[in-house]
Image 1 (cartoon, rainbow, N blue to C red):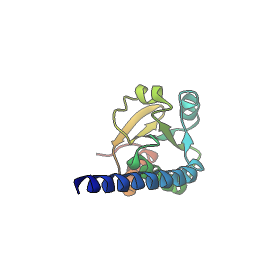
Image 2 (cartoon, rainbow, N blue to C red; image 1 turned 90 degrees about the vertical axis):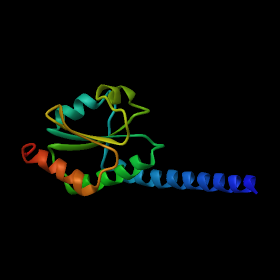
Image 3 (tube, one colour; image 1 turned 90 degrees about the horizontal axis):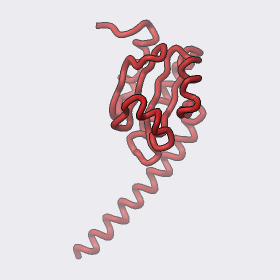
Image 4 (tube, rainbow, N blue to C red; image 1 turned 60 degrees about the horizontal axis):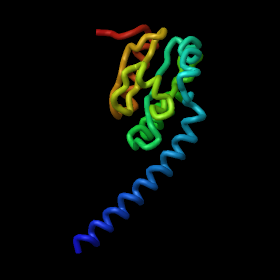
Length: 144
């Protein structure tokens, strides 16, 4: 009996994992139209071309990261401006970028203004909170 339950739980977990991967692929395709893939090669250009950069540190295997990519893509579509870029950094492919910014947990979202990190949000963040933090930087910085 115990072996049957264990086997059933394993199958459910495997099915959930496969479904999450499918959802991740769909979100990734959608967000790739809006989010710039950032790595060590294009990071300097991305930062110099835009006053504000919002970078999501993520990984393909991270379920919460997949959801944050969707959140960031929705915000990016609402805040489409020349002076801001929305990007994602896959920590497995661009480890040096994650290391440069001291990323220890994913998802982590950095807001970078004029090349300097002004805000860091670790973990899943609501669309409203992230939008508020980004908007604050777009209108001139933090308020007390």
